[in-house]
Amino acid sequence: MKIYTKTGDKGTTALFTGTRVPKHHIRIESYGTIDELNSFLGLLRDQKMDTHTKEILMLIQDKLFTVGSILATEPKRDHRLKIPRISEDDIELLEKEMDLMNESLPEMTHFILPGGHTTVSYCHIARTVCRRAERMISYLNENEPVPASLLSYINRLSDYLFVLARKLSNDLKAQEVKWIPKEKD
Image (cartoon, rainbow, N blue to C red; front, side, top):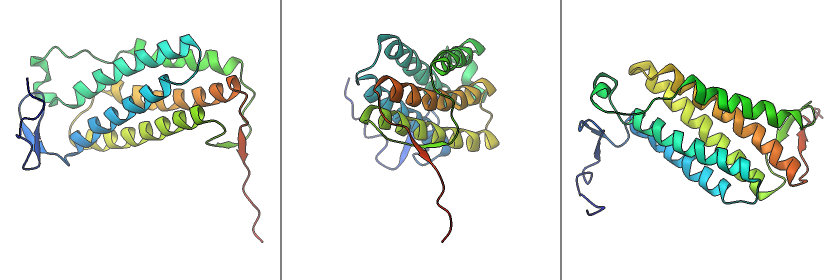
């Protein structure tokens, strides 16, 4: 099978159902951003960290392929395809992982500036890409319904990535820099 098909040469692409839409369609932007997030999570997973965290990131990457598949399918026609769903269990896993990580972290009293270690920075980049995906999916949802569990999962995932960045800072002995607004002169 060839990778190039030439079918998108005029600026359109096909959804899973075969419907062609412009490549700038919000549905394409939504699952394209999920793909970008997945790539950043792969980069993050390639960094030095504990095995459990790597395993959770691998599970999340798998779920993001599910999210992308759902977003690449028109809601009125998705019953024809056997696409997995995002479940409450998937959301609860993220919550459970955040609760576990938070147990060993110092209380947060200020906003934190991203950085301190390359691995932590990669995690913050993934978090911000996740937030962008959430905004795009929310916008898509205003015009074409998106499963509520999918929106919840992406929202919870960005929270998870924030807590993970804090955990990685702690594990790597990186300094968390608090954002303290400067007083006006």
